[in-house]
Image (cartoon, rainbow, N blue to C red; front, side):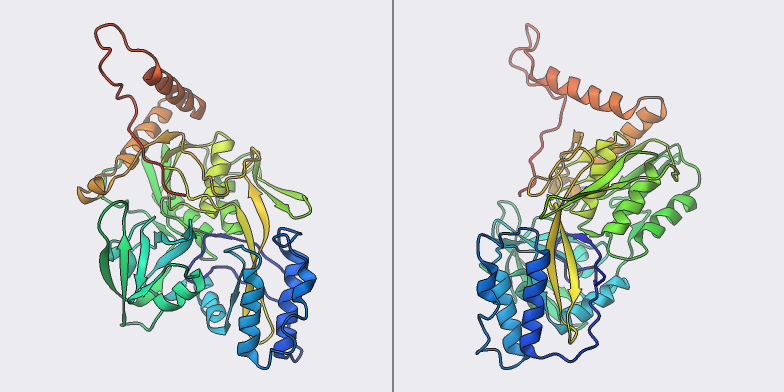
Length: 437
């Protein structure tokens, strides 16, 4: 049985497909039984949320009459695990998943997840209807076409948001402490382009600094797009890799892109339910060893956190921005007989320093907030800071120098000020409001 890893926030749809060869005839009961066996063998927590998993084996034998019954029974069984990332995909969802891996899907271009039992926007995909409508990472979705989202599952929310091209979906959005607002968004074909060389607010970047915006790890050729973008820009003195609002995707992309910049060291570790740890290491060859800054924010999740965590822990790059989303779990997507599928959490991952970032996120080396006022004014203080840091590194400062400089600035900001200035506050650092977890 072939299995591949998925590192990504919950998406519409999910990104990675793992197939089970199913050339035999199946019944609704055997479909249910196949999922039971997969969970029994693969789910990350062996105690299955503190329950005896055997109680589910024949729980619905007398009730499963057709495929619809099997689907409901499977969803009920999976709900008992209390893991929002382990979920059943019906035939339509699994087919749409296949289309996404080919970098094309239909919808509004939005990634969603549950945080503190609230349905939230992980990130809109660049240049999609959701992005153009103004949706942002951490927006709370209160209603979908008039239906309250309290207690809703990600799957049910996805079903409501999906629809035919040219039709509209109405979302009631709550942002921070502002009044809720309705957004009417036209569904369209979403072409997933992983890489852009254009920064969000057309900030002027010095010609000797390369800029790459990586918006998704979904596409199977995302790593190749990054490599092509670096070559197309020519030889630069330093680079800025923008992972802001990148919700994740394929593990293979995260590892390969990290390997573009790392000459040595580990990239990521995965730990299964038995405590077995597998470490992925970088290879000696790199695309560049020039100075590197990585931008992250609250919408940077999973594969983005693998990449930024690898670069941070290996002191290869300076991270600037806001705390990342905090998804440190690994899913496997399994195709089931008849064309449906099941997404199973099978492992957790650790950064090279053995840090578990799940529900915690990665803290940037230099915290800089990008406010809504900044966005309205077409300002990008995070990118501006990144440019300044790259310029310092081009002049000879190392990643460690920059980090130590930041530590010193924080210490000075907390220390007593000189006589005559006792009532003045230090302005050495910008005030940052952490993203919600």
